[in-house]
Image 1 (tube, rainbow, N blue to C red):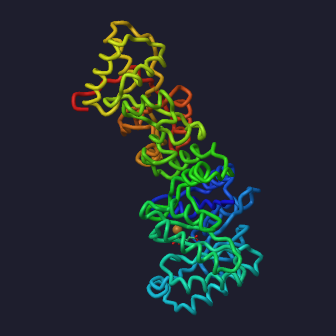
Image 2 (cartoon, rainbow, N blue to C red):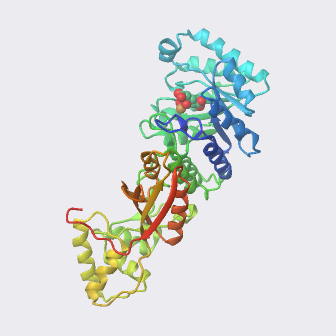
Image 3 (cartoon, helix red, strand yellow):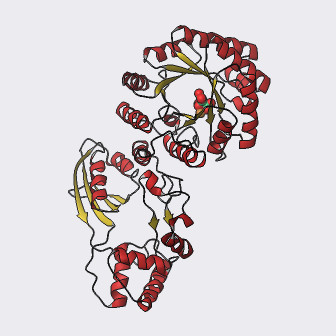
Length: 460
Ligand code: HCA
Ligand code: CU
């Protein structure tokens, strides 16, 4: 059965400019545990006192997941991992020639001895041990087998096959894992695949097929450079394509949003599974198909994740999508009216980036000559925010930018320090958004003004 080790707290914090507080790490660990990941790599305690404190706190909760501390091959690092109360230490020591020569200045036989000594030292402290040959995929294969078997003999029960530079392809990795599996003493094999060519998840899936046991992930695919496989993508791919129904899918979307917030690292709208557009349909042909039967253009039902499909209305839109949107408001129009409405939408869509429901309702009013006494379902609000006097306004702005539905942020003069525009699907979502914004450190007071109508300037 597939295992997942999530390393958002270690690899994820190696993302350029991303740092978590101890409390944020605890929250992330609890949410990961709710998903049911098998292991949580909570950090390398030698990095800083707060990294160490977070591991200690996380290890003190009775999580279902095994708590792993990362460490270089040093006694002091391993001692710190032990002192944190982690269940397992993951010792990494590079094995490729380039790393041994240029970085570590060690021969292969010196490396073998260092690895043997530190794995057995960790084992003697009563820790479970994983050994990672860093840069495994550029390591001479015979040496890789030798080094892994040395670690296993010294007490490691897991080997992490690290594609540190993300240079694998699925068929190459498949063969390597198959051979490695056959040549290694009994142990579990983890796959730590970096995503430099966008192949990390494909490589990891190939590795599992070839006999490896565990995939390393991070929430939102965070990590050094461009990161490693995304947790939600990994779980959904195995769940839907390989039939591994082991993890709880429901917390995934909120966990991803939470990470956007605390990392300040926004998802691209076209990010699979958790991205804003993952279940949005646009062209007339597609939306027509979706309205007749969602299976025509949906790989799976978004409700599996607690998400909803969305039909985008703009110049690509056809009649069926516009009619369906108007029907949502209880508005019926004749076929002739519908055709005019669609033509107007196309004309406006040629000039504007985005059409709101308010615009569509207004067009319907003009075309039919009937007043539409309805309130648009999607809600727009102006937020006015006052910042504590000892806090830099720019630091609050930086946090606000991590909310995907907050836009047009301005620092302003007057009673308030910041104004911003918020978009939400309904009143409840808007309330939740404002509640979340209020938790941003440094915000003293907020005021919300509902937008009744939006006008664009001439050169919007
Ligand atoms: C790094 C180390 C590592 C370790 C992976 C692991 C890698 O280079 O920062 O211990 O499984 O990518 O090799 O993240
Ligand atoms: Cu890594």
